[in-house]
Image (cartoon, rainbow, N blue to C red; front, side, top):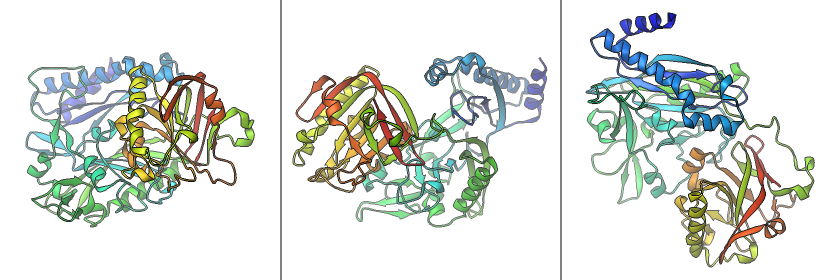
Length: 478
């Protein structure tokens, strides 16, 4: 075929790491873009023999094409109601933006920028977007690994979390390309030529001081920059707070320009190399631009579009951007079963329910009072993420005796963002009556488990969850 000759010319002319990635109709669709649906393969492409480079490149192209038929891809197409037989894909061969550090190759950091933030925090507007950063290659972000989040509106403000939460969720490893060939060839392994390195790699390569803060246990504070003693948190503070170079202005302008040009909300992937001599200089490479995923409906219906009797839950303060059909399990606390003095006892009960549902390969809707995940039992239910990990929809409500400012997911922010969990807030004193839960309906469903606090019911026909991140509206329909 003609493209074989083209690939041969690429392998003859280019020496250095390459990313072989897909560009399909579905991934780039304006209506339902599926980011990361198919495989990406990175190869060192550094063998002095052009024939070996050519064979590596051919194998990588074949691997990316074949990922169309991987079970994960087929399952995603099936869930979205798309016929895989109609899919069309091109394969892109792209230079990897990075630098050689001994036997490893990687950029100083990589990132994903979104022009609209469906999970706003720190009182930032949704329209100013969200940026995710990680040291090394962007696979850390794409795989939902530990990364740093910030809003371009307030680049120096950390994501919502306690100090312990920030330290626990900090990046501990980075992805690199290993320039030394592996002992055994594994062409159907996406990470065949990649290596996940500890943060010590950044220290040895002189990279970490540009990317971190150091935790001082004596003051329980983060001090910007690198110090030999103390835990290092990859929070990019020398750049975002210290202004090592004006990265935030650059990325904000790029997102705004692409959004304007595309006439839609967009998502970009990029990588940055920091100059090791003049550290105030850096070069940014734009790797990909695509439309952001939208909910399946063109417009979120208002409550007036439905008979109120058809609505189980309505929220006028919701986070997310999603439509979920046929959720069959609902776990909730009835107001009469809730006690503000017994919140510490509740996580053990929900943990058992969560385990039972997850073991069946299912997800569920979870509703409780006060803040989920709080460390202060007087403000809500102090559950850990592992105890509610199967929840696809989380609801926080208030009562007269449990009426804190609701967290809107701040205690589990990284987890909620990574899993695209819908988060609904319901104030008991909502005078507009636009936010409510139909407990009478829930009480008439088939009970699977009834504990001291929580009730797990089966919704016979399943329900539809709709959350419009732009309007901050959410509904669960019978």
